Image (cartoon, rainbow over the protein chains, first blue to last red):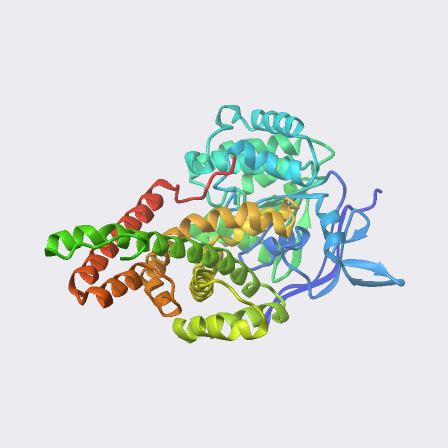
Length: 270
Length: 230
């Protein structure tokens, strides 16, 4: 067994008096594709945001690639990490946002080259070549000189994915990448993610409501509820034969919202 | 006679025509004071806005206090202070520079608030994306946040340009020969205040209309989403 590339060790996250993550234990192996599902407010996006260092933790330790993310070892003790340490750790991670968060004042190509040039110190030529290759990968090679607002939502999100890939992270975090899209644009984004998932080295963590898609690409599905993993397993098991009552209830509500509260139908199915 | 130009008092029209070049000399000073004052207000305002946004109170508090102090005291008091008190400590500035500095400092308090609103209006997701891409805080500010904030605040900053222009006559009390001061000197010497002062009013109207039109033009021309950086 290989060492986990991501490991949450009794992680606690509170927003004011609300406990979002309640002593969460969670780990991901290198190259694993994990989907996190669960009701809103269950802490699933928070897991990704903590990994991307957008949200700090109140207690516990997060390990990424064998090193603590939010801590540094000083004098044999774990202490709050410096910005320098987190800067180094962030190189391992990339994130795709629900709202795309492209830089609106930059062209598509500039969106893809800014960080590689400034952070990875690539030459302009190298960064440009890398950007063009990635745009081809997401099928947007003709759009390089446009501004984000000239693209459709689906195209913008594909740029978002390409931008994250341009940093060559080992771990990709997808935070509800299709939730802000019109239904007819979801497919093109999922196809790009599906292609990425076929890369065996890349570790993927995906928060989504696209259950069908989760079933296709994940090695493992985690159902989050009230800041903890309520149930996890291969998609074939979790979707077909959920064990926990909460999981069943959630899946029923997501798959067929009309029957969410229909006891009759539920018992008929069971 | 002023600036070596004589005036002709034979008729009202001839008088007006003869003092126009003198008033225009004053207008140049008015414009110079406006531009310099506005420039100081733009730069100092941005510095104050950044300091006020600092996460540590040791940095943000002094900036807040300075802003509040400057905003709540009259321009004339600040001007007198700079002009009469600073020389006692060996800092002697020409009247024009003192005046432009006073205008700039006074208005930096206002522009800093405009900048602050503009910076806060930039979506949080932009900061997050920049962080996810590992850009430094400085780079994020100068190349992601600021280019998006500036176009949004241009109309509000432009209004302050017009306000500064209208405050320049205050500098006449420290002997700056701007337009109003020139007109007053002409009035003192010819006992005709009516014509030079009316002309100053007219010239001011033209200046402010032009400045406002310029600001509006800029606002329409700049893309709303941000200034593309080449």
